[in-house]
Image (cartoon, rainbow over all chains, first blue to last red; front, side):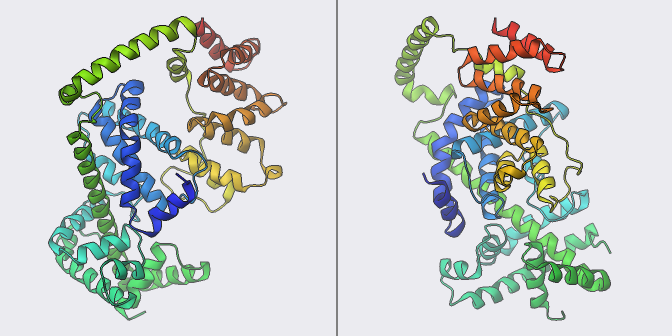
Length: 191
Length: 250
């Protein structure tokens, strides 16, 4: 697997197919390695591997990683080592550890890690379900998967990128309207 | 900037760091002076982060479905209940593994190094001056050390490789080797540690220590033992560590 073209395929097209191939290729080996070397449970190892894959994907789509000079496996396992150690540290410090601890413990978000900001972000996430498709998909494709307007137009068979731009704006306004009562209650407007 | 749609475009360009420096500064000044604009921007930021959280959760859910596919075709490792379908296969494989392991035990001293290395190895800790969680500094050198401090080893070596070799400091090379080692890329770590270990650098003793662990990881215990004996004879802080590791190897 050529690393450079793999990165380009993950970025430019919908990288899910490539990601799934890598996932299936290294998952079992990672689980066995994690359980053997760190005495963590199979469930914890699975959770960590999924986090590793998400980090791998996000690093590529936001441009943090533009080339991988080692094997992909080496890269994944080195992220995994840190994540396992982090998980084990968290578990010794807290009586309960939830998947959400990872979801918000991240470099993905623009805002500060304050309690009411985190809660606001979770509220928006919940409101996305109420928003429904096609708005949900368009917004996730643009903001999370970092596809450009033209790519989204082609994927969803819209006329052109201007159409998508207008749709994106309308979808954001709809989302804002759905979330507004919750966000006002949290008083996150810091001026 | 009174057109709401134009505002959204500008917010997105700013958040995705697509603005030139003068445009970014201009935008930040506008935010400072226009309370309504700043309120709209903060609201937009929350929405975008919520959308990204939704995307991440969806990706994680997708991966769980991939897990279920793997389980359904019986390829789940180490789970006792789910291997019943291939019980006979795993039994035969286990017997083969036991036989091979016995053969290996008689013919080589290679078993156990991974465990010994794991119990002695800690990645070199370099605490950058910048606090964790702060934005990555723009200065390339600070960026390197900050990435290393955060455990982003891939980004660390990527940035160091962009620095011409003649301009790399001793510390930079030492960090580079440590990053490779942390990623288990011993082929690249060893020559760098080797060259520092042979020099008068302040990192020479540290390089010998990490180099000895690298040699154990690639099953070259003789080279590791030579280095550890050299370290043991010094007054450095690595001397007691070297002695302990030599005892464990014995």
